[in-house]
Image (cartoon, rainbow, N blue to C red; front, side):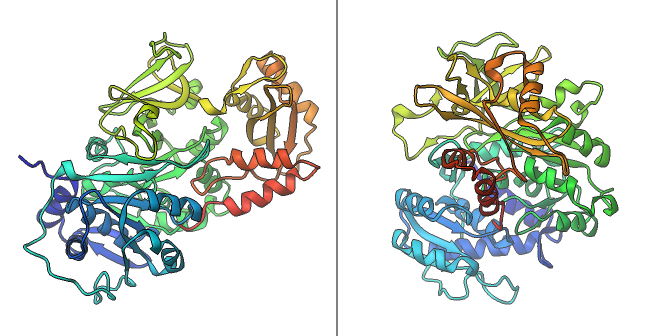
Length: 528
């Protein structure tokens, strides 16, 4: 018996329960659920008219617009494999992934036509989305060929999605998910999950990233997605009031920019019920500012491209009387199991640091660009690549990416970048910081820190290093060098760009500040 896909269930609900309710809003365009259903079936009809073989992919290269959602639902409805191409990805990564993923069709919006043409050698069919007006078809330049019978659901076992890792610790990988990812997201509808029924959510992170999938529970429960092309703090603050926004998800860097926007004090944010945040460790001082301004609405999300949502720190746990919890990633999400294991894959006791393993319906099938022997999977468990521990009350604490751990060149001891970063952030004149290792000629690594001072403050590197020594008490944890910059470079997905920082340090010759600022500008989160 065929089990219905999430796409079929959503479209049935769109027809029977929420037909005239607003589903998607973008630049003044307002799509009802009925309009979303029509667009999805139109797209499915066009795709079914093309000679696409089982196992081939339909790629989409588009920013945050209603048609993106329609294409995703259509691809899954008819059982093709969905390949999500982020417009912010380096061209070489796009080409590599298109070449390796058997892409038969590339759907693109006009803004990315030049990129689509450059990728055309790895796809047999190019489909250009129209301008999005209601009186034009989804693909105005394409004539639909013959289709035998109505569009029907191919079933949940045919659903496949390929997402891409950010590549912050190495080469970007293709992550293959089956329908379990969507089952896990449906389980996150409710007050303790990611969406409450009927909510209005602002989306300013890319739909083509796993964080874009985290907004699906809103549509699964009859809510409204207000789509922004990119994150702009002033626009977000304006839109919260104009569209009566109740929920939004922000990368940690976005949250910092929102709190620093000069219009924050005048903005009406009274409709907000939840602000999700994640992607990078968050300074507790920043969280306190957010809680002071927005109230008890903060919810931390720890998730992975490979596993979906792993854990949630709920608003009730953002408690200033329990400040230690502010550095926690919360408790495992519904249906998710988490274990901390040592290098021999044995579970360790609470409080002991080890590798974070996760199991649940949202765990990937695997990387389709790695052989079976190199997959980080073991009997349904995923080796996340993160280090952490469980507190006595069962809260998960995530420390570092295992690949970011530093082997101190002088002592051979392990240095946790997260611990050193926390000590740096405790300095009253430090706004933000990043810690990383650079290789030494004799083996091991040098501990490097880059900090952003409070505006107008003059920081002495030796004073900063002394501060770290007092807090941590271990000389090998003290940075060998401390550089000051105006801002930290970030990737298009909002994470601190340690690759840019290491490159800047390697290039040295007194150019660190200029190199970091240049990379910060070119890597700044942009239109997606």
